[in-house]
Length: 309
Image 1 (cartoon, one colour):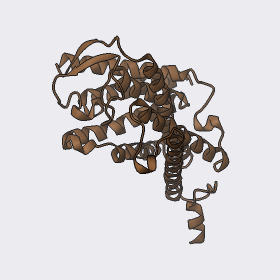
Image 2 (cartoon, helix red, strand yellow):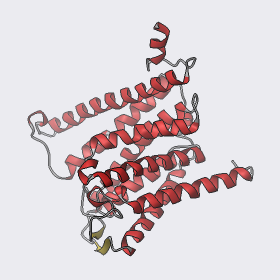
Image 3 (cartoon, helix red, strand yellow):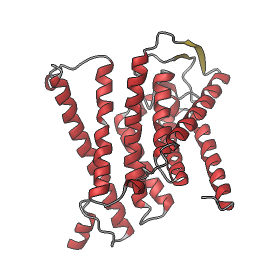
Image 4 (cartoon, helix red, strand yellow):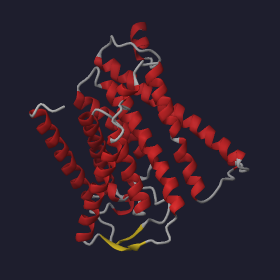
């Protein structure tokens, strides 16, 4: 009994255990990293607000963009703690986490995100679900830059935790499909807890949950294909930034942080555009993610058939 308990503790690097014990151990480690990072991040944010002359413990908080930016910048703590855990406890290298020398794949991920979103916008436009109004010439360049950095930090944090740490460590002991499923569940659960997905209605909630799993599977597939997490970090950051800041649309139930570079009108709330929850609860996104997964799998299979790594 004592051996089983020790095996499950996330503070050791034991490998000699059953697959079930190993999964439980790594999920516990994920939860530990997530909550410790959240607590430390909250403490840092409170400290920053206090240093700026506010009194967050009594509800006196800053308003405007700074109130939204600071928590996003705080996500860097999640990445730091996850990497430290991997290096100090699991004795893994940065390359093993997925932070390889293929940093240019970050741009590849951005390209995939842009291509997907352009096609989703076209689908929604053709069906009359949305209309393009005009380019916003009054958009804040400073805001674009600050939120660009914020989404780079936030997207990288989720990918380091879910793919770099959890998935890449699970595949050492269990099958790849199971590792992808478990890491995708770890990716989906915080989104369900922190965003009001059920407020949009049952149909949109089901589509939204399905799309969260699908996009997580896509992230996992491209990480396994390219053997690094730079590509998923780029795709993830660009997806959120383009939706929320460039297009000024809702992302996972969260309203736009600022007026977008392109002003788009939602003509009607329907299952094509995802209603109030945003594109991520729409079937246009479902179709595009599935197509992208199929294309990536086809390319990967073709390269493997030709003996190309």
